[in-house]
Amino acid sequence: MTKLDKLIQELCPNGVERRPLEQCCTVLDSKRKPVTKSAREAGEYPYYGANGIQDYVSNYIFDGTFILVGEDGSVVTGRGTPVVTWATGKIWVNNHAHIIEEREGVLLRYLYHYIQTIDVSSLIHGNIPKLTGGDFKALSIPVPPLPVQREIVRILDNFTELTAELTAELTARKQQYAYYRDKLLRFETTTSMQALGEVCSVESGGTPPKNNDSFWNRGTIRWLGSSVCQNKKTVSSATDYITELGLASSSAKMQKAGTTLVALVGATIGKVAFLPFEAAINQNIAGIYPKDTASLDPSYVYYACTALYPKFVALQKNSKLAMANISFVRGLKIPIPPIAVQKRLVDVLDNFDAICSDLNIGLPAEIEARQKQYEFYRDKLLSFKEVSTNEQWKEV
Image (cartoon, rainbow, N blue to C red):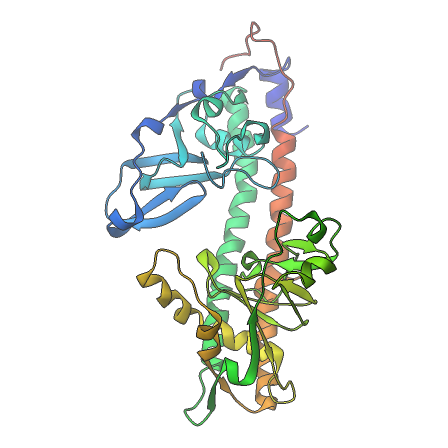
């Protein structure tokens, strides 16, 4: 019998009472203050929104240890559970995240783990997904005695600490990869620099009208939007599927396997992906493929395009919605070393990329496994037999 089993048997053998969340913590939502991006003064303090840090500002409104839970916008995970962030120190929180602090009798860290198990999908309403303050405060929380909470937190924190260590190591590896990638792609001035439009086919696509079911229903052609561009040498899944008629009746364009994709607009502008299969793209992506693969390797084009990101970021300085057009992309220049050099670079960078990104090997695989292990034990440890509210668990 484990220590936790003994504690439960001793302190709450008949089950655990449940309470509304607002009785388990102090809700600080009334103290939040949103600040528009244009009005923020850059500084050292994290500025939090619905799904984590959005910016760094020159002042703070909270100082301590808190849980933040997404209120509107990106507020649920793929499992239907809330977006939960642990935040400490001096911080600023806008009105897109609920904020709570610890109250005597319930450990804040216990709440952090438990809230991540609640399916709130039925509570999310509105055109902009929202977990209202009322629904948030009413979330039902099982409250075991403090010694049980502490033991659960101890067990689960061991998993999260290991995951955090692995994530920090992966971050360091990614920084190392970026350093060597940039160094390897920095050639002597004698290396030929040519515009992408001179050496590659560069084109964007389109979107079949959404109101025509014959363009979308039972579609079998992969169709991609700019969200697939995540600076990874892969595309894991399609954004949607269109029909042959949808392809023929729109400006959507098929791209070959081995095409480099570059996002042209919004939050992903300038980010890239490498297409492992044939697919159609929409108007927010540039598809880039060598005109002559005997002299220009498709994978080399992908890596060369990763170095162009600052050119796209510069577009954001003078516009609220950053956007690049095809003429801009065609005019960007990349170095063109001999094909043998390109292939050697691709071999080296592919190995780095796999270590940093491949979910089947290395650190990403280990982090994925630890996260699944944490979620399994979290869901198992936080499942309690419920006791009627008129029963009292043993106080310690």
